[in-house]
Amino acid sequence: MTPEIINLIFPNPLPTPAEIEAKYPARQLPDGAKVTRVAPSPTGFMHIGGIYAALLSERVAHQSGGKFYLRIEDTDQKRKVDGAVELISNSLGRYGIHADEGVDKDGHDFGPYAPYTQSQRKEIYQAYAKSLLEKGMAYPCFCAAEDLDIMRKIQEKTSVRPGYYGKYAKCRNLTDEQVLENLRAGKPFVLRFKSMGDNNKRLIVKDLIKGDLALPENDIDVIIMKGDGLPTYHFAHAVDDHLMGTTHVTRGDEWISSVPLHIQLFVALGWKAPKYAHFAPLQKSENGNKRKLSKRHDPEANIMYFWEKGYPENALIEYLLNLINASFEDWRRNNPDKNAFDFPVNFNKISNAAGALFDFVKLNSISKEVIAKMSAEQVFESVLKWATEYNTPFAERLKNNRDYVIQILNIERNIGKKSRKDLTKWEDVEGDLTYFFDDLFTTTKTEKLAILAPLSESDIRTIAQEFSAVYQPTEDKDTWFAHIKEIAEKHGFATDMKAYKENPTAFKGNVSDVAKVLRVLITGRDKTPDLYQIMQILGVDKVKARLSV
Image 1: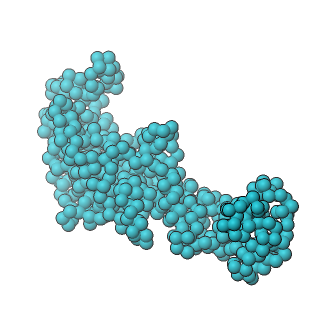
Image 2: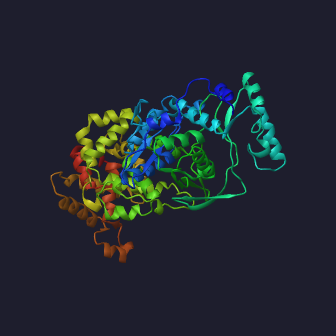
Image 3: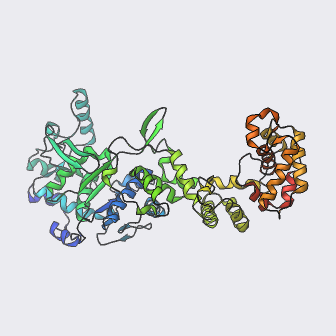
C-alpha cells in the first residue's frame, strides 16, 4: 500500500508499535507463572459457562503464582447493554473469583495494562492494523453487504466452502489506483487480513486439554477492522493478549476452528502466540440426549438463576470444580475442612471428551453438604441477605424473629456427619419454617388425617390426648420418648421392632407410627428434623393446641 492510501485510511496521527510496546512492557513474573484472563462481552447476560471458564483461568493463574485479569470485549457496540460490566464484575466477585487487574463494577480500570475495555483501545488496534497495511499483510475491502450476500449464495449453489478467500476475495487484488479511487469517493470499507494460508494443509496445534490437533490452515481474509474503526474479536484478542502478557487462553472448544487464524495473526504481527486450552461446553440432558446448555432455552444457563434460587456461592464453586476435575470429589473427602480454592486444578485432568453434564442432583447434594457445615448464625445471615434481595416480606419476618429463627435453624446442626442435610438453597428455608409460625401454619385437619391414613381418627385423637396430658417441656428426650412408647404399647402398637417385623399383623403399627401422629399434628408433615427439639422451640402452649384434634 502506498503512503497516500495509508494516510487516507488513517488520517489522524497514531502511536507507533514501538511506542505502544514501551507503554506495555513484558511482565516480570517467576518462572512457570501463568497469565490468564476472562474476557466476556457486556451483553447483560452472564452464562454459567462464563463462571466455569473464569474459575478455571483464575485457578491456573493464581496456583502458578501468576496473574489473572478481567478484560471487557465490547467492540460489538450494538450488543452492549447498560449495567453489563457491573453484572460481570459482581458475578466474579460473588464467587470469590478475584481479578488482579481489569475493570471494576463501575467501569474503572485497575492495573498496569489499562485500559482493559476494548472500545477504549481503538488507537492501539489501528496502529497495528496500519502496520499490517504497511507490510502488505492487510488491505481495504469495499464489498457491500449485498455483494457478500451474492457471493455467499453462489458458494451455496455450487457447494463450495463459504468464505472470503481465493477468487471470492474480490478486493484482495485491487490496484493502488482502484483503492485510491474508492477512498477518494468516500466508499465505505473495512480492513481485511491478507491470509497466506493453504486450506489443504494441516497445522498441528498442541492443546493443553484436547492434546495435539491437526487443523486446516486458515485461508480466509477475515475482517480485522470494521467500518467504525473498531477491530473484530479475532484481531483485538491477538493484540490485547500480546500486550497484556497472556500466556494461557482458556476457552470453549467452539473456538478451536479459529485457532489457525489466531496463530496466523500472532505470526503476522511478529509475536509469540499464547498456549490454548479448549474445554467442552457444559451440557444438559434432554429426552435421553445431551445438548449444549443454552441461554435461550435453559434458565440455569444464566448465573442469576442461582442467585434467585439462593444456592450458596461456595456450593456452586465446589460443583464447578467437580466438573473441571473429577478428582475434586476425592480431594474434598480427604480435606473436608479446606477451602475449595485450595484444590489443585490441572489441565491434564480435564476431560477432553464431550462437555460435562450439568446435573442438579449433584449440585443439590453438594449444596446440602455445604449448608450442613454452616452454623445456625451463618445460615441465618445468608438467608437474610438472600431474602433482602429476593423476598422482602420473608426478610422482614427474619429480622423480627432473629433469635427464634436461629433456634430453629440450630436443630440437628453441628453434630458431625449426622447434621441435618435437608436444606438445599435459601429459597427453601421459608417453606421449612412455616409450621413454626401460626399465621403460616395452614395445614387443615382433613389434610393431617389423610397423611396419617389408615389410622382411624379415633386412634389419632386418643394418642394426641394422652400425650398432651403427660407432656412436660422440662423433661429430657429419654423421658419424652418413654411417654410415646407407653402410649404405643397401651394401644396395641409394637415397641419392639424385631417382634413387629416377625409378626406385623399382630399390631396396629409400631412406635414410629405413634410418633408420626404427633409429628403430623404438630407440623403438618410426616418428615421433619428432630421432633423433640421442634416441640421445645414451639413451646408447650402451641404443642398442646395443635394436639387438639
